[in-house]
Image (cartoon, rainbow, N blue to C red; front, side, top):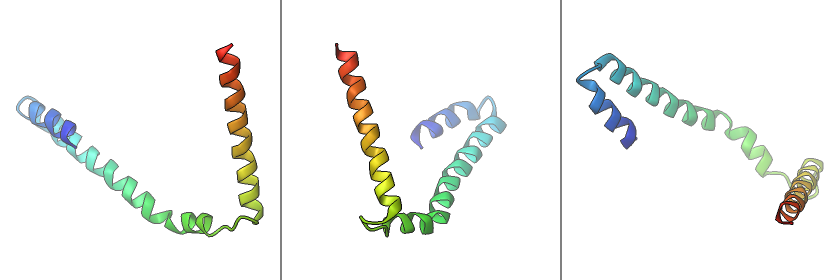
Length: 80
């Protein structure tokens, strides 16, 4: 928040409407992230409640494992 305040204080003498809109948009963006986190809490909790034997968790682990392997192969390829 400090960089936004610094820019706003600098601009407030020359362009007060622009400075006000910067603070307003920053506040709206900050609140939107908090609201999104609050509304998606149920979905996140369902993901956290998966056990290791569920189909979705197994699929996700295989996909992540494949991505790690591909990244490793890419790093080996670029090192040569």
